[in-house]
Image (cartoon, rainbow over the protein chains, first blue to last red):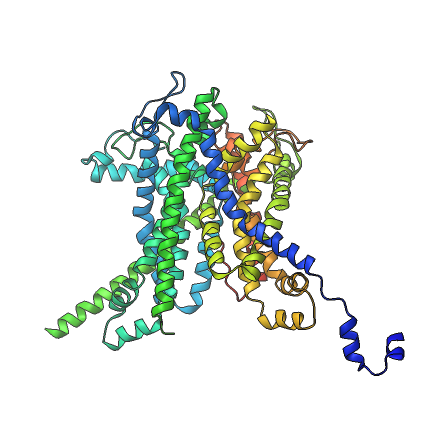
Length: 329
Length: 283
């Protein structure tokens, strides 16, 4: 009020503005830096994980060197540690999972984007998301008490009768086995491959499909020529991301794979994976070198999953880039 | 001749369609099977005792998982102390401040971090916390879950903040409101429902995690009175009971699994109701 009285010549609005304090920059700066720190925390975390695993396994790495990855004796009493059976188990169970899950997932994604009536799509997607939300330990529980008994009496017996002459399906049937582990991992990675593939297929421009239809292609030909070949990289990325999940899958596998460190051709024989040996033996590791060896297993697991994830994400990125440079919407 | 070819192409197309349909059915079959068996084997043991009693000693029938249910709640609370602020503010950075290149890198790293197997978090927290304090603890378990939540929350927060129209920001800035207040009071408030959704999804995701708790929270057959001591968690208890040789424990494991799955599905459904019409990926 006083202002307006003493300086009547200045228009009131201007006077108010000139006397307002400039907005404080401190709050802005602080908030900016705070969010920046939080944003960069993901990089810190990746480095932290790598550093901690490296630090924890230093002795084992220097003591065993490369032989850690290539020998198959796992004897905590004699302090001999070779991770080959676990690497083999992880590779084989993930491979089985991919063989089962990839065709199913991609076909489902195709059904969801190309075939299904519109009203069915959202509910089906919700169901697949529910499958993704089932905790690993619960799938493992189901695996132990429902899947394995069924596989032992029906699934494996049938496979043995049909394919028993190959080394992969020979030998005694125990129940807990590499194949059971692979099947359970397949169930775990079905949702992620399906939903990533679906996103990829959905981003294929409709113009692609319309062009193929206009040439007289049938629905399958449109899918094959216009959709699948266009989405190839992205779908490959989805598969690699699924592989990343499969490699690190822990609880469900631990509960059904049999946890025996051996390398057998037969898929009916029990196996062991990198993740499950950590889960089972970590708290039992009584000597330093034993714990170090388990940390090194963690390091190996971290390494392979990081590579798989990097590769998968990069493949998805190439797909996105192709989209922004090529797609006509 | 050309007619034959045409028929063949049509048959092939129909065949491919039916294969895809069957595949879709096969993919949701495990969901149905797991749910069916959870109900059949679990419902009988879900009773009042289950929610209010401690586990009975080996050999005695009955008892419950009260401590594990509370323990899971405590662990999630501790996890959210770390995961929610870091994740949400990180998401704010991505949506409001970061340049295109920084964002691309951070997003990429967050996605990669998301793919780190959960057991690795257990190992890392064991090395960082458990060894240092010479004890398994609720704090270690909460930290492991909290760190897992960060990339999840960060990505969903970013997504929903980007949905806030730029006009809101411009209007606030034009009124002379400083940028951080604009973000806090206008942008984040507008997107609050979406942010909460993201947090809930992250909760649902880590609530079922067992692997990171195996050697951090470790599990406990009694009540936990001190956050520096081991604590029980529902998924851990399910695991311990599932691999035990006792029938009664198996029944309890099924009951625990049923409760856990129902909790997770309730949260997911809640989220779906909250975000009707928008797509938020649970993965």
